[in-house]
Each structure stands twice: as structure tokens, then as C-alpha cells.
Image 1: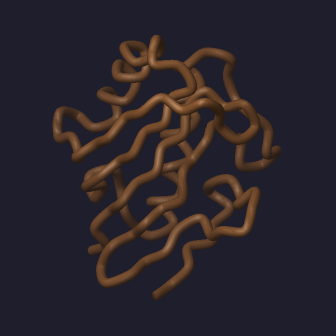
Image 2: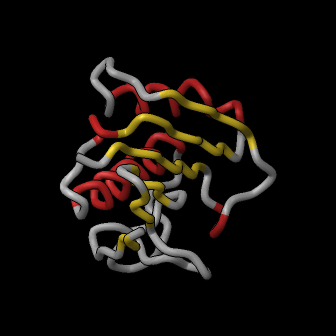
Image 3: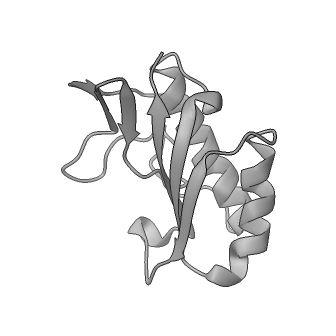
Length: 125
């Protein structure tokens, strides 16, 4: 097992690691729309926040020499399911038609009052 620690994604805001590589898979902790350099939420709309979440995911993947093409599963948490269509529009733009398996659920609240959180599982080369 190997812990993933990078400045290319926000630091953990609790007792967890950014990700763990185990048996050829990266299990990444959920990413919320934090600016990695300030730790502050980026964006006030679901589209802006989802874009920042993907920037964070890409940073985490890059630190492991991976890309979104390596992602095989996502779990998406939305504060408001009414944002589902706008979220999907941004989400789809990052995968170029080759989508991973996915779950998407509405939750009562997210850390720092974020509108979205996404966790991933990726295959390590």
C-alpha cells in the first residue's frame, strides 16, 4: 500500500489521506471544490464547483502519472439533486464519451457547505 500525498490537490481536512494505491488501484478520497493553495471553496454554482472538483481530481491523478482515462468508478455526492442536469453537463465534458461506472446521490450536507463531492477509483498503470 502507498499513500498519495500531493500539492496538486487540496490537502486532507480531516484524519484521512488524499488517496491510497492498493493492488493496482488508486482509491481517492472525495474531492470537494477547494482551491489547493488556499483551501477555500471555488465557485458559487454547481457548474463552477464541479469544474474545480475535476481540476482537483486531475491533480491527484497527475501526481500518480494517471489521467481521467484510468478512472473506472466514481461516486458523486450532490447537495441538491435539482443540480443533476447541470452537474452531468460538466461531468460528461471531462470523459470524452468513455465514462466510468458511477453512482450519484443527494446528501444532506457536504464539508465546507460544498455543493458537490466526487470520489474515484482508478486503475494504476
